[in-house]
Length: 270
Image 1 (cartoon, rainbow, N blue to C red):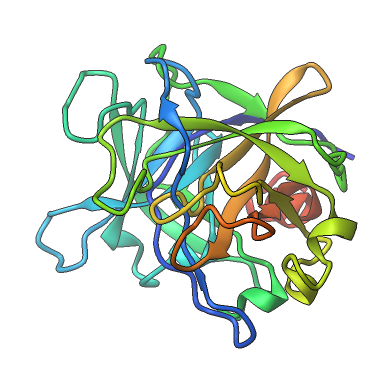
Image 2 (image 1 turned 90 degrees about the horizontal axis):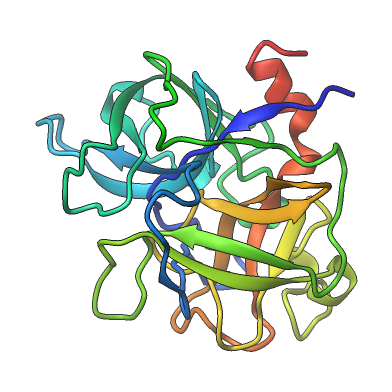
């Protein structure tokens, strides 16, 4: 099976559709701190022009998987019109132009065919084809995907990154990062955790009441150092509504290793 070297990016996020059995919300980094400049270089800001007036705002997080493609969450796609989106790579402070950024428009949106807007059924993943390629200007890094169907052990420490809200007063200008521990499926799917909504095609992490994703982090990466490299093992999908850092309600990610065949096909690598 092919292994893919990735160029990672970050994007903003949007609210997930609530499943019928659980009230959920989109993600932000709770309990995080400012990332160091020029780190987590694969992080991308996905931005949206709601009124077709050229006023783009940060919507979701994501990861660039090659020079022409960005991976994000399907629930981040508010409109099928690709012209309403752009990605910003090499970003650190959302409110300042620092000279490291590349602003690239989206040419095509491909949402996983199994996504139906209901988080209970998973498949919360999408690929964006860019109108022009991202180039390595020293502020964009290349990462790798996990091995196909690879899972992470219980308690394994990964890192969540994004520009999601850090408290209920507003969103940060600076990219946030926080360590977050994996919760294995046999635990996360227990009734007092996420129950049947936690599928094997998802990764749960957190649930300690301290560290969590929340509004603004959706679509962004779960960064894990495995097999000698930083790899994007997850795409931020959902978490609890209200207080995001709830005990027994970890942040839930789409498990990237479950969707690599589909990704390779969309990217023309299959």
